[in-house]
Length: 106
Image 1 (cartoon, helix red, strand yellow):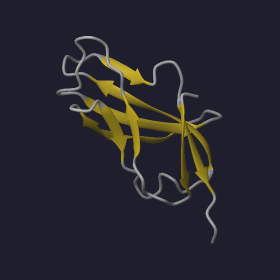
Image 2: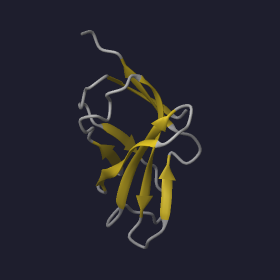
Image 3: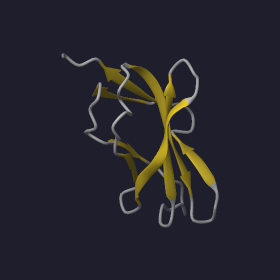
Image 4: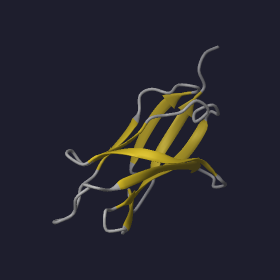
């Protein structure tokens, strides 16, 4: 796994962010992004939602919605970028982001 992000069950903050390293001539200006997350063991996507694109700093981010972190466990995630020319690239492109949703104390 490329990175690990840890959050407690039912939390919606902080947002998850991913810093991109773009190739020469690549830009996020006019790009859109989607955040996708599924169980580490596979199965259906738990999240498949729009993500924010900061084209000035090459950062993608996703603000958690209620229900996104309602189940403790280990997940894998990625950001899918659609550039202004319609080409698609997934980040990270050789691994996944590991998301740890920890139980909270009730």
